Image (cartoon, one colour):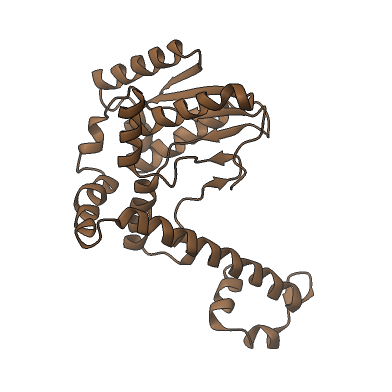
Length: 257
């Protein structure tokens, strides 16, 4: 549906050792022969959890060795790096993860696969709502962005963990996911359970909503480009009257370009 993979692709897979990334790596491994995929796993030790982080690192090493998957392990002092950069630990860790993934790319056609899933989508949407966002922000996490693909995006965390149990896929639990220190964890543990009391299918509802909003956002972007083309008088100059005759929503969208 999203054209995530082509035969012969080289795919760098973010691998934490948790259920989501273990399921993703196992799924791509099933496709490896048929799709002639070159799989490269990447594990980042954020050095935030001491011995537990070393346990995760060793688990990932054994997991990949047993399955003949190339693995690259990076160690980064995320807490110190975030302090120096003036960023939150969450934001800095995300930035460094993607930087490490990109280091492993050998060509523009290589893909980066991350294990984001439906619960991540819901958490992201609620986080953006709390901070303030527009329609584009409400589309959530895109299934494909450039060379980044997210094959599990429309699965829930419960479905992924159930799949791992049924298929005997080993995984580990990250204790930091239980900490209330991080904003996303507070959304995960406090906000979403309350919303699921109102609607037991809340995560699936969010996924359907973001799909619809993505379609509407894409349509409005197409209309925006069309209107901008019709208003263009010369380079960086638009027809004022045509702009003022547009709907205010389109005016705001164009002015933000």
